[in-house]
Amino acid sequence: MQKELDGKIALITGGSKGIGAAIARELAQMGAHTIICGRTKSSLDATAVSIRSAGGSCDAQTCNVADWDSVAALASHIHQSRGKLDILVNNAGVAGFGKPLHQTSAETWSNIIDTNLRGVFHTIRAFVPLMLAAGGGHIINISSIASKSPLPNGAAYAASKWGLNGLSYSVAEELRGQNIRVAIVCPGSTHTELSSHEGKSIEKMLRPEDVAHVVSMIVRQSPNSFASEVILRPTQKP
Image 1 (tube, rainbow, N blue to C red):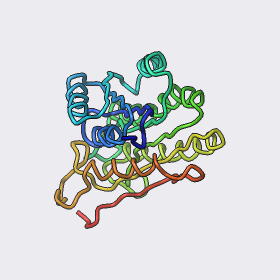
Image 2 (image 1 turned 30 degrees about the vertical axis):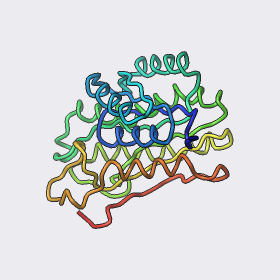
Image 3 (image 1 turned 120 degrees about the vertical axis):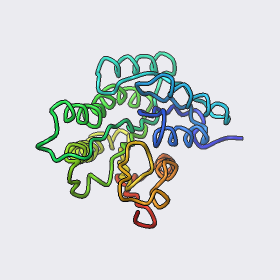
């Protein structure tokens, strides 16, 4: 039976666990061939096996999005093995909570900005040419509700996500006339290893599958429009 994303190639960064893995599972169930990337081969392989066991199509590739050479090598591999890319989900991210900015180390700042913001620059630079050659596609950047509100003791993380939003809106304008639609998803409190759960009810938090569902809606929207931003909140405040 024909599925909505049959013949489509989707790359999900940070795809070994949490939100990234949930997105990969969702897109694979819709018929896409999914490629998940990250820095830890063992967890990537385990997620790819679980997706294939459920009837989906998935490859795992190690890649550090903060390293241009690593991203360029992945782009070359996808070009040679698949010939195109239809969907890019920039999900890879690191957090840094618990300290005010003046107590945050330069190393922590660089790690957060290099992964959460520079990494998206790298993937867009590397993969947009593949999308243009294929006639269009989707870029979906996973941001955060922290890009909308002050985040005390998490300023570096908030800065990376505010920056990601500005980058995304601008790239959307650059590419919309070339049939590439760029969207951001801003989840609220989500139950993953990345999130700080202090003082929150886990039962009320979003699940990775909730974010994956929004991504699935974005990739199947009407061709003459695009949702540039989705803010996703838990039904009950945790």
